Length: 239
Ligand SMILES: Nc1ncnc2c1ncn2[C@@H]1O[C@H](COP(=O)(O)OP(=O)(O)OP(=O)(O)O)[C@@H](O)[C@H]1O
Image (cartoon, rainbow, N blue to C red; front, top):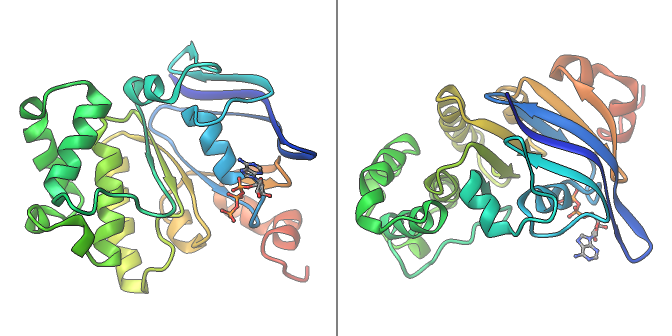
């Protein structure tokens, strides 16, 4: 089954074509990594998938349904969960309250109905001991965990991760990667934008490379990372 399909999607801001005729699909259960230089249009691609922005051309199909013009809230409720580059929890709520809020919003249920699921997510993301801590008092790693947990709480079929490993120490990064691997092992489909390549390639089965809004490569991580174009454009390496 295909979870997500983008067909010939384009988006222009002013004179800048930020998404240029992008076509790809993600089968159920796969983890796809997206890499590309700063400003290549990676976050914009997420915004097109979530419905935060609408494309000028092309179609977005989610779980077999054309959602090209559907509002963001509808897509969340269909199963698109997202973590943001800069974590945006409710700082004055506890970790658990943040999850309950995300779950109630994403799953259109009362908080009492989602409590057990939220406790399981706290466990999966290593936050159980911090359940009653205010989000504003968390360390960077725990803020990242909470960002991941909030996305999970919406009950996603497709989890979008935007540079979640940035700024962490090596050890913290390993911890977070282990958590993401655990979620992936539960069968969740993942698309992950990440500059920390070793973290990304230790999880994803496929890599997509964006440059100036265009897909310039897609395939197995080892093949993509060894390709001349990617090494030149993305890594800025002499080849
Ligand atoms: N709403 C907007 N209006 C105008 N320009 C925008 C808008 N959103 C993004 N852009 C521009 O589109 C280009 C792509 O931005 P985007 O954030 O998608 O890139 P990115 O690949 O995610 O970059 P980074 O790796 O730095 O996060 C940039 O030049 C950015 O300034």
